Image 1 (tube, helix red, strand yellow):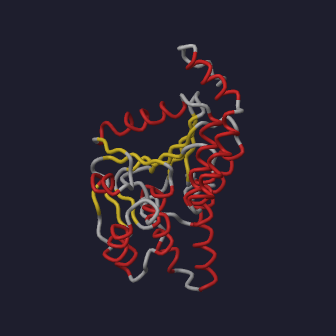
Image 2 (cartoon, one colour):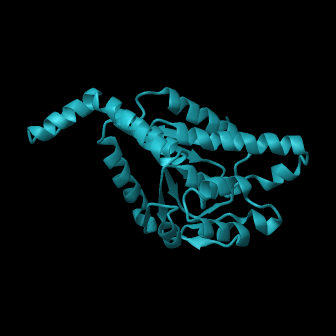
Image 3 (cartoon, helix red, strand yellow):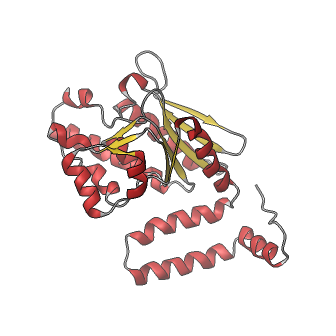
Length: 263
């Protein structure tokens, strides 16, 4: 899917390990989530979900920013309740598909991540930010409370911290984002790629099956009571233990050798 100039809305690359990088590619618009961008992301994420050889996904942005949220000019051009309901539902479904992927998804953040762009960071499983990155849910500054971003933001930050961001629209720094739980790691701009690679390398060294089972359980149990969560976790671990990667890993531990996992 391309814009009027013929440039793809999302650039996609893949390395020999099965690590897919999806680059939001509207740099002149700070990678705003236009309908075209949403469609391209939906397509790319569906391809990843269907490919059992993918090991991890990195989402980043071209140009000076990660993502500035929804395309407000596009939204303002079609002021109808039906259009807005469909747009926000579509964006929410795209965000949820990231959480449903069987592999870890890492946000590589530089510049700004605002409104739905901040939501995108929050919905990714992991996030690594440049030390000069800034984050905000700034819709309230134009009279639009960031309701959909509040869902993922409140599941990353403490309630009062999330609510303060939502009602003030103020920016927080990368270091503040790390302290509040929105990002995992912060690196100097020139070291951002190395910081992302460090996390990716650790992930791809682990069995894909164990990570897929674990990721699905992690998000399921967050939405249930503790008894149901423990029951689900126990069943998940039992199933995981029957997988050949776990059997080999435990045997290797017993024999004091590196596990010989199939790649």
